[in-house]
Every structure is written in C-alpha cells, then in structure tokens.
Amino acid sequence: MTDFGKMNRSDRELTAGEVSSLLASSPAGTLAVNGPDGYPYAVPMHYALDGDGRVLFHHSAADGLLLDCVRGSDRACLTVQRTGDDLSSESVIAFGRIREEPSLWDRAIHAYIDRYIPEGHRDGPRRGVPGAEGRATCIVMDIEHMSGKRVSRP
Image (cartoon, rainbow, N blue to C red; front, side, top):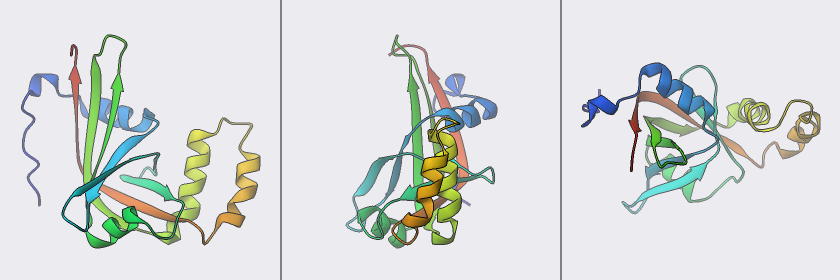
C-alpha cells in the first residue's frame, strides 16, 4: 500500500464530504499519467463518477498518447480546483489505478450525457450513442486516496 503522506498544512484540509462534493461538482479536471518517455503527461479531461469509487473518462480515439500512457503504467492522479473571485480556492487530488476498459464505454458515455447535458436535451445525444460504438473507449480510474485543501487567500 502506498503511503500518500500527510498534508503539510492540515489546518487547510477539506473534510471527506467536502472532497467528495468538490470532485462530484467540478466540470473538469487534469488527469496526470506516467508518460512512456519518463515525462509526466497531464491533460484536461471531463469525467463522470460511477458511484463505485471510480472515475470514468470517455476517450474518443482508439489510439493516442493518453492511451499509450495508460497501457504502459497503471498509476494516475486527477486534480480539480475551484477558484473564487478573490482568488481563494479549493482543490482535490485523487490518486488511483487507471486502465482502459472498453466494456464500460456505454456506461461512461451515458454518465457523460447525464452529467453535462441538461435534462430535456438528452434524447438527441442518446440516439447518437450506438453510432459511436467502436470509435471510442472508456478509461477507468479506481480511486485509492483523495485529499483536498482550502486556501483563503493567494
């Protein structure tokens, strides 16, 4: 088991509920994976939570650098941040194991539709789902550890 250590400024630590809420409400995050050349690869991504401690990412191509990285190493982290007008912020970092899981593509795309498309406008996108099968995949991250932090001033 990995020791993720203790937060340096524990007085700024978010509660478990606040961490879960921020992760669930953030529209996007930055997914960081290990690159094949030793450099980290971080990419902004939309995501959906499936309720089983997993993060689902819809990936629209069968190949590419992100999939190469996922296939080469199963460790990843996802960060999300919310910044106020006064530059105060809250952030979450989730560490976990990541893998390509094409069998969950349908679940991921429907989770995306439910999350990002307003109710009443979802029928059109749902009708388009069968036509995209085979041209996209699902990347799954099983969360092993999460923490969050609040900064009240820059």
